[in-house]
Length: 459
Ligand code: 0X9
Ligand code: CA
Ligand code: ZN
Image (tube, rainbow, N blue to C red):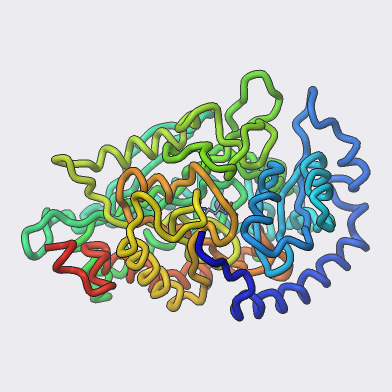
């Protein structure tokens, strides 16, 4: 195991800002908690952990863990680790999981429930609350995408690649100048994949997909770099991997803080698989996911047991043409924490079977370049905590696609809104990733050029 540096100057700086924001948030909680539509802590803790009802999960601040190994132990209780700071983490847990974290010896405090953005107005079922109306629910996102495709038929086409558990279309939008089949040199166009919304409550990631489609459609022929990329790359955008979870999260007009899909689990009343623990690479290998259906990080009954994961994995496999995977690079968008992450998540080690030093160096060099452009923090994903069965580990470990995970805005759980930043930030926080996306596209033909080894790897 390589030495871990949880107390880098960067994280220490971030911690100081966070402490102030959280202090204010906790004060708000102390005053407002009983009015929370999700009930008081006492009510939550009297809810059954098994039986007729799904348990209610809630956000907590856990003070004490400082190392990746300690954070992995927190995650092993079945909670999801949503944000990582120097001496604390933010988790989503049900009461039993929170108790398990307490028994590890850490201080656990409830954080405010997701914000009420109804503005006193009535909620529309399956729609964002009035104050967040600029977010797109599933139907609105599909309508927006259909309009983009209709406006730019020479540049975009939409495919239904499969269905979610509840039967919603999972789509991929192909973006490229359809007039050219190859790059200027006659080679097959390198393909780049953008995936969004594995986790239900991470709605800003769907807005990221909509931003990319708007930008590519409107800037082709105007912006030199966009034009060059659409001429020389095939871009695949899968805007919504978890439509069922996303709709469930907003269904009542008050955010539910839901993470998983909505697939039932046999022998249990707990619904849902964590899609980002269900991919078929080192599935269940390493204590980075849970076998309990009630867990936020339930890995499913088998790799690709979630229909949404199977659909997207089949799509990726369908891009193997003549024995060669056409997709060279990828970003899977999440929220929150403002991070650029690279594999592996299953091991703390920088290099491992299937991850050479050159691979790791190319990942890190381009990861750091992207992070320099958007102000995120670049690191290997296991610097946070161990995960197994994640999409980026599968895309790299199984398909040799240079796959990153972006954790978008905000940096902090408090002031920025955690999983629910207000809709006023959508434009700024999606455009913030324009340069990073262009840098990945421009490097996708030979990721090893970034470490001066183009001749060795890409001749
Ligand atoms: O835990 C996750 O799935 C991601 N964080 S989130 O808060 N959005 O749930 C991080 C996944 C990073 N990738 C790997 N660990 N491989
Ligand atoms: Ca608003
Ligand atoms: Zn996520």
